[in-house]
Picture 1 (cartoon, rainbow, N blue to C red):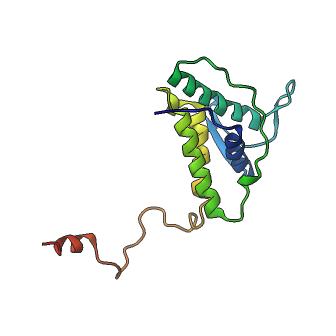
Picture 2: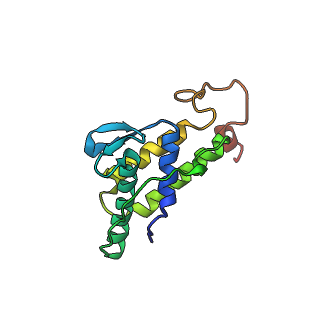
Length: 164
């Protein structure tokens, strides 16, 4: 499996999506959930919440690539920039694109044995969950299996019995 350093635009895109949804992100090392915000979290550097969490993602991507290719590159400083592509009136296309972007990030960041326990993996899971919740029809869907229809397409059992 190959891995590469993602474009910062991917991280900008994912975090802009979360920010636009006013969503929260789970960060286990800080034992809390945080709302995506432009709040200053470091007065000396004027670093925002989005800067900090984008840096976490970028560092994890570098850690993965370094592990894969036995390198020791350091992630550059990260500053969040709004990504206009994270706003769309086509909610289905946006959610699908965000889900695919999450998969892209995971694929590039999963080379270490402990990626799934990392803060970055938890951030991506939070983004993925938010994208799923934003799908049209999600809120109206049944919680669990829907009721069985009285009539409908032939059942799998009937199809299998007809193979005879």
